[in-house]
Image 1: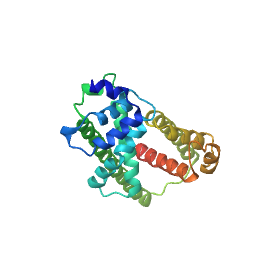
Image 2: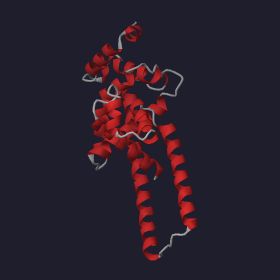
Image 3: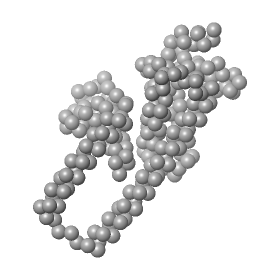
Image 4: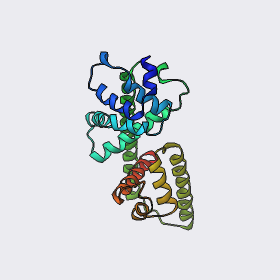
Length: 226
């Protein structure tokens, strides 16, 4: 009966009860936070994913701060990537979340794993990029390379390949509606952040919001395509 009553509650009521439940010990939980996860990932109920992130985003930030010596903007980007990893992994399941997770603590443990894995992946990418840049620096310092027409043609081909990689990455990795909109308007329609904020005030409260989203996209793309 409790499960049925939870399914009948509005999203706003589930969120409120989850906030209260988060202050309780595990033995006093009534499943409202688990229900919020189910509505976000299993039911894909409008607004549930955003509510879930608001509920646990500070927890994800805390995990990342504790695991690595990071700048605030790095933590924000990694937290976003961790949520993306969590979404991609669980939203594709056809069965109910309860078939894989017994309680909300198990879901939070999995979210924690996504956050730490995202951090480790970023650190490995940065290490590879640092080694590559160091090697390239050595080669450039020791071997002068004249620019020829063949070099120009090769550079154009490489740029085209990188563009194709970037487009493929965006199609597979970006699910946030605001990010998708900024991506299209900025890089396909060549609109400035000010133009985007002016034309889409219902989506973006100010130009700073557009700039932050655009910068976040660029950082994530550089890390993924490094």
